Amino acid sequence: MNAPKDRQGAISRYREGPALLEEAVSGLQDADLDRRPSGGGWSIRQIVHHIVDGDDIWKGCIKMAMGNEQAEFALTWYWSLAQETWADKWAYNQRSIETSLSLLKAIREHVLQILECVPEAWDRSVTVLTKQGEIERVPVGFVIEMQSDHVVHHVERIRAILRESAGA
Image 1 (cartoon, rainbow, N blue to C red):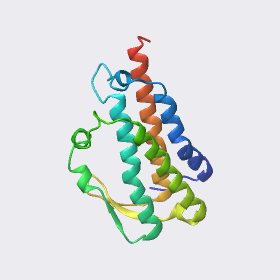
Image 2: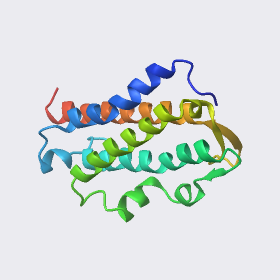
Image 3: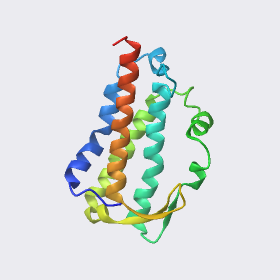
Image 4: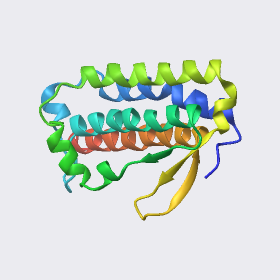
């Protein structure tokens, strides 16, 4: 895994993530947020919480890599259960999205501020034990790009749910 070569482009996409998500859910009422795709899957509300929890979790990896490249970032605690289980345990269906949207914005601003102050952190890395039990070196820049893509992917899912519910 490598940090993207286009650092500024990746940082720009990372910075835009909260606004992209907020725009996708702007003006939605609770009934809209609870819409699910007809073929099954998470509601818009659940997707929002999932995105933010992912950013919150991976922020730990970013900060760990910035501070201690000999450390191992382990997600076995998370990967040991299905994502649907975490959604239930963390009450995705019951919670307002406002706090999560604020948290995403705060996380991104926090990480971007550190990257601005410590530019060499982009290529710092940490060991990650994958779901398959493999050990990989994961640089900060890779996590930034991965989390940017995560938001884009799920915003596309949200838009698809809204199009489907509108009959388009």
